[in-house]
Image (tube, rainbow, N blue to C red; front, side, top):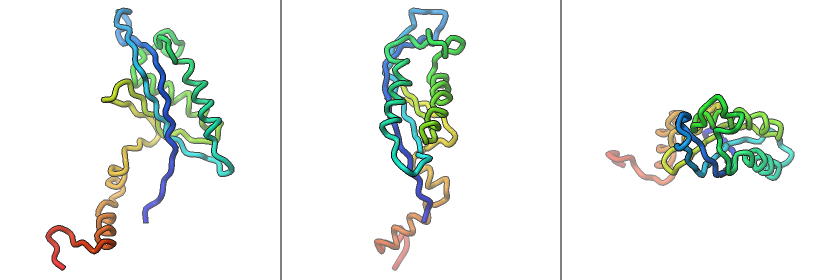
Length: 156
């Protein structure tokens, strides 16, 4: 039996503007940014949903409806997804720790097509994790044994 893993996923959205071409202020444009944070609890006594939601609302309210380029965090760096992800991850990791949680990974997207991810261990989906652990064949074998189905090309 494989090891069981559990994590919570918090989602936050905020509307903000940024300019990737600093020499041309007319290139300022707006996005609805989506942030996903995978966290695990480091305490056993009680869930920390309410304090985490409040903490996330407070943190991301500073980005709502503003020009990111004008913030202190982005005065010396261009507010790309990658740089924004670095700032958010760096800022939120200790805040989650203070609230009894560990931030595993942060995802940030500004369109339905692409998402940037940063973390200690990137969580790339169940199929990838099975393949990475070398457990795909064992899983298939267990399913076939359970349901009594031979593998393709096998005779009974």
